[in-house]
Length: 140
Length: 371
Image (tube, rainbow over all chains, first blue to last red; front, top):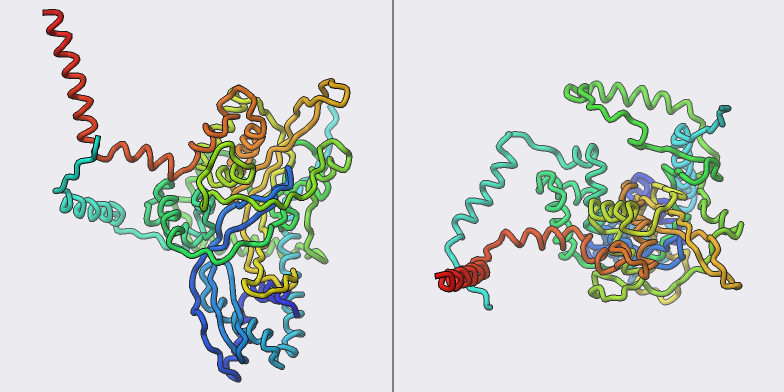
């Protein structure tokens, strides 16, 4: 599974899956910490919808960690102060880079978690739709 | 005139800082960071927006440390921001990717996808709720439980819905100019000082981090006649947008290999402004233009005011202060304006002594002439 989809699933999930998957790698491989979780900033580039040009809306606080497994460096980046999650994401990223066999078995769990994430989001959105206006034009 | 160093205030300053801490603690009460994050949503959003740093947790610490002073909290956040590295720039956030939690239009009753009120003060009575004095955790639990029970009855959608922009429909009708995506790299005012004439990216960056009160006041001034923009709000939307960054070292740039790093909540506004333009026959005809406003968190007044000022600054020829980019952009930053005003209370002994000497001299000369 590619990184974009994988990180979406792992970050939108409550962190339990990232913890579980990274634990299996820590137990079986040497995970060398290249850079311990540290705080930094990401500048956010946006497209405005009036003239469709680009601008910077501002920065967001992130936590970043780097881990090496079998000479492959993995990076974990997440919004907020999330040391544990950043490190777990870095381990998982390194595992995919090193093409460890465990990653093949992760696919099913990730897809299941993705379904659950989507279901929860769709439920929350449906709840918000209770505030949708139903206009009726009045006769005067 | 040079500055004259003086000393002798060290002990007084130490005592003053201690006194400041005493003022914060003397009530023998404290407020948890988590409590601020859970209950001061509007304040946190404003601090994040004006400091241009998205972090509810840091904003909550700043609010606690500043005892609720907005300008001090923003100052603390900006100062902290300057100590952090910036290893990444995000990929372009496209506004259509917003997971909307509130979306209204003042221009059309029926908008595709419908109007979603979400959470808003707009329809509340502005009467103080004295029941809050005795609000207990039990009563909160009870209310939440009832609300959750009510929500459980709601059937989930099959999939997450993303709303089209109201303006896109009008563009399809040819009522608004349709712009191609412009990928010119934006300028960054935190890296390069603002120069005039400014670029659109610089203007938007300055305004989105502007002080809420200042942006609102100048937007209001434009409406009242100190500007030529009086828009109709096409769409206000509040929601979360996803942030992605590219890998710092990988040579191949496949979008599927980007990192998703999380969401941020923003308020985004498109205001429709009627303008007169000359057509091919050199005749004036009415056309709509769009003023754009956006800010961190939920702060609709600021975003709407920004959309007015955006449109003002797109038309600098108008002879009004709100159309003057130097006037607007150099006076709306919280740290700059509060910092400069505040510096007036710092010692100006020599400067003032000099002014005093001049006045005394003039008075003396006048007296001599009169005698």
